[in-house]
Image (cartoon, rainbow, N blue to C red):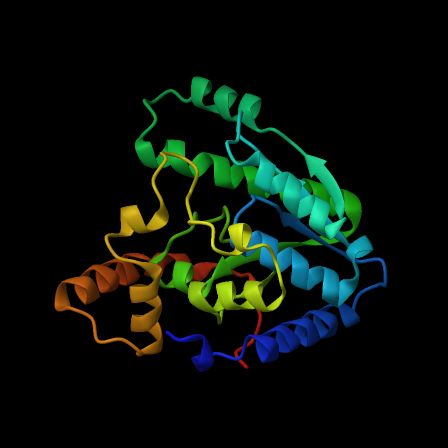
Amino acid sequence: MEKTDFNAGQAVNNIISWVKEFYFNFDADKKAVIGISGGKDSTIAATILCKALGKDRVIGVSIPNGEQGDMADVDAVFEILGIKRYTINILDAYSSILNQVALTPTRQSIENLPPRLRMSVLYAVAQNENGFVVNTCNLSEDYIGWSTKWGDDAGDFALFTEYTKTEVCAIGEYLGLPENLVNKAPSDGLCGKTDEDKFGFTYEELDGHIRKTLNLPYEIIDKIQIKHKMAKHKDLSTVIPHPKA
């Protein structure tokens, strides 16, 4: 998808207007609580929230599970935005739960436990800070279920449910964020592989399929559609999405 196919400036204005409208019904001290992972989605979302609400009403939470290799990126985001920061390491809780599970943990339970613990942390902070938890998933991830149910797919409201990964990156570029953050290879941070390594297709191909701007080989379409069908059970999430423009 070419950048000319998407008006990032208009998208930013739409999201900011919607966030302001969403918060209008609550007290003026109501905050937004967002997990800052060092990845593009949380970085760009936090930037927009600062523009919509002011940085004093945005709270970022860094939630490593032990050592986090890209913590320098996390630090950079907080330095750029100047928002209030909490850092809460979930390693002890994560290890304690796994050690007490009577069954041998499966790969899925090992991989999905940290995102669910992180969401618990975000809600704990939000309830102490009079805030709403922000969902940072985008349309591309939602389409193929690239999120953990009741983990990173949860939240009280979402900014990017109508925007593909490609479009979110274009928004980040429009906002003038550092290229190394906007174009950082997406990864779950678990096994050293990027998202695209695991998919068997690229975000460009996925987004082209979603927006119908690319003619893809059948085998790629088939891989995308299999993941899309398998993700249907995750549509039960009750997060309030930013409406389609």
